[in-house]
Image (tube, rainbow, N blue to C red):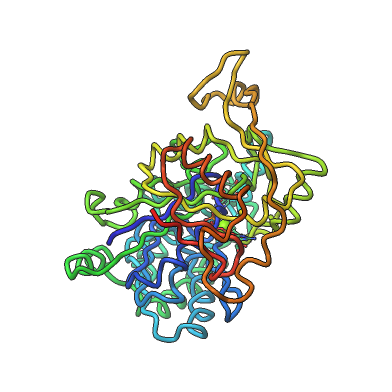
Length: 427
Ligand code: GDP
Ligand code: IMO
Ligand code: MG
């Protein structure tokens, strides 16, 4: 079985939890986009584990792959590998030689570019993601394999410095000596990482030919996609299902199923339009119940109701087969629960997503109200497997409403951060 898991909203839908839950049956888990702008939290009976670059299936799968579509901070990577080896000593980590390297120059540039954007500031994670993809497409990027070659690495760092001099002049890298020291540090990291570098596209294909199960874990979410997200408030890579081919080398026609992860409400970090956003006391409560603070940056996440217009778009563009709904426990604690059902613009109903920022800000959303279902923390307390039939009627109504409206079955329902707070709904 070849499966891809994707976020259908603005990221942080709970992809990490769903990946970990499913990874038991998959020998290989692959990341194919983004870098450590992602933060994926997994909670098991052994505690909490945060993933940034390594796929969240790494607690249980034998092989974890960091594909060529990723941008990798080598120092963050080494830290993460170290932490992972404490909890899963036998895991095999393979990193594409073709993945691009986030250097300290790129991290500086990320912040410098944000300052210049001023009103159009994205609110990036400041991890150097955008500038690293810029260099990839400018064909000046540093690839993982370059970390093994002093001459090439030095040439590339100098080229990037010359091209981006106006921005880098104010940085600590504005001297030959400082850049030399940076290159030395990168080479040292490269030496440590070299044992993990591999021809990952071949490994993935060989695993496929042996009939093994492979799970692809998308980072970010559909509305952060560089093309189809709410540009320019997006990340710098494609986050859609189709990106797995470019980002891993695996042919898209061989993918069996697409699982879309959707939070029972919506959250967003960073700037940009958010049609179903709520503010005030309701927002504070939802943020509090859901502990909506960024895994990577600690920033408070913006929150709002589920948005069916965005969701149906995400389902179509990713060709989603089944849905995984997370944080049902969080939403039910609100006094009132709403779902954004329809958009209208200038008094007329629209089924598309307006692409001008002005129109997006003007969209009016009509809502449907649902009865809240209260605290679900007692369900599954006895350690027994939770069944769909254990759920209160109000939750089932909410789930079945989404199934009917989206014309897709909900396969997984998550009632808590913990691995065992998960229901597999019979299809
Ligand atoms: P990802 O980026 O999509 O992997 O999501 P994050 O890990 O960044 O954010 C989701 C957060 O919600 C994490 O802290 C998870 O531990 C937590 N979480 C996931 N599913 C559930 C759930 O069903 N209920 C609750 N209360 N928390 C959840
Ligand atoms: P996971 O995988 C939520 C957002 C940032 C910012 C925009 C651009 O955990 O779901 P970037 O640093 O990528 O240039 O920032 O994208 N963003 C995320 N928001 N979850 C993520 O990843 C995100 N990755 C990027 O907040 O608005
Ligand atoms: Mg996250």
